[in-house]
Image (cartoon, rainbow, N blue to C red; front, side, top):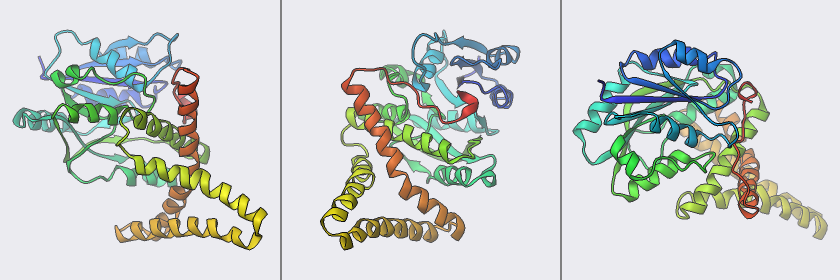
Length: 324
């Protein structure tokens, strides 16, 4: 029996699922695939490829956190280590052994992650942006993506993922593990290739809105985390647009001040990107998206606050049409 169990989660990923399962299967680990209401035959594909399939009850809201917890719960006599993989990702050869060996040798560590890269970074500016976002330094971390390996005993001790989160559930898990005294690490090893498949501005907007929802939900549970990002969303997403309107009424020449602040923010982002080696064209595009992102982030935050106030379910914000 392997020392590692692998839980893969997905929804309408029939095109990507075979590659994700094949890579996971090569590790020799036990596989569980959790399906969130697919209509494209994904569960049947997983079953044919030898994975245990868990189909989530469609009467309750789908979240990645809920799916990952269901996959972990389906593993009877669990292995010491648990790897989570999203099915738009393909595990890199050797990652499972590398991550498992690190955890076995470092008893203070509960969780490890690695480097990801985009499969098609040149397919769109959005894919290139996500590829840039993946390039985080190796070493101690306080948050990571959903592709991670965790010590099973630690995962169970903190209660797994908070299934109420529709985004940032990984950072919430990391926060709870850290508060229990565990160390978290990003290894200098390739972990997965990721297929964002993002070609439309509307997809980027929805993905960023979902991130804003997670940012607000994370702040409600862990007020000290990422408060600067929430403050910036309020400033650039609401305060400056309102100030522009007010100044236009009071004395129109002053209306130039808020746009000048946006321009300064863009220039700061551009310079930072160039100083870290980003190509000029990409630096311009990324700085523009960083500046624009405050609006959808604020929309996502407001959506969370509205749902919380009315005690509504935290429903997933889908950004790719092939998953809807």
